[in-house]
Image 1 (tube, rainbow, N blue to C red):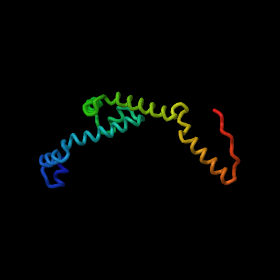
Image 2 (tube, one colour; image 1 turned 180 degrees about the vertical axis):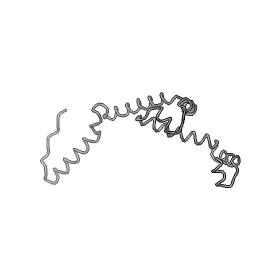
Image 3 (tube, rainbow, N blue to C red; image 1 turned 30 degrees about the vertical axis):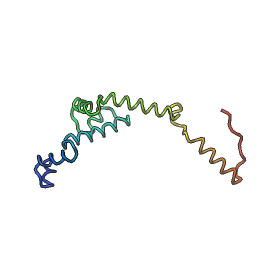
Image 4 (cartoon, rainbow, N blue to C red; image 1 turned 45 degrees about the vertical axis):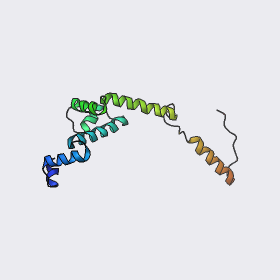
Length: 133
């Protein structure tokens, strides 16, 4: 904060007051909010543990990270990660990709119909009867 205040030719206290007036929170609170938002994005991805996300942001204490996360988000990071994973699984299941391991695209039938239609029109391929399920 001191270095930033020096760069803009203000005292640290005055810069902090100006920042609070402009953004509605202190520079530290603003920084912590942005860090927690990034942590939420990493936890939603699901490939990092809560501890790895904690250390990604330079936190030496998992307890401090969890406490601050809980204050801002309203739930501990582990619970947030589990709920995000459950929501992602539900979305994948409704899109039809979870049942078959992600191999099937929900647009596959549309592409096939378009491809067949264009090939039939150009005389490359004879029309095929529809497949039975």
